[in-house]
Image 1: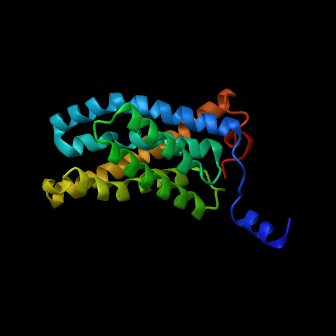
Image 2: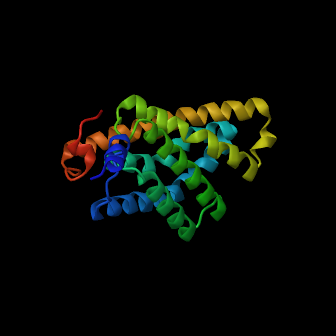
Length: 202
């Protein structure tokens, strides 16, 4: 290994994906596509009951599969692959929000998730980092969604409150839940061949 390779390894721990990694990412993406089918009517029901603010409370659940994969696998590129597969599967299954939204949302999620974990050099996986990642996934997609779905008609006050609620949902239902699920699965022994089981929380 030359000097450049050693420097790169110290900065970012690049590791090849195993077959198990790919299978897990595909399974989580497929599970998300199925979950989204059931989340869509729930989202519509919440919107009918409490408008966009109530509907915003479940936002974190739409993003959890990619962040959970990142937490379990802990390799650069995990978010890109998982959210990418998720977008393709959702597009084939059909989405109440349109095919374009599947890919735009996935692109926003993967860029932000990789940026957050890259900032910590893919070595920090504690609760604060996961909460940060869960909340950070929201704003960029919200910006695009506001234009794609006409959120701007809500008015500035409602728009800002909805954004805050979505960020909180991302923190709790994506970041925190990913950490708790990942740790629970690791303790069960199901993830003994993944980084979440082999490494410390960091």
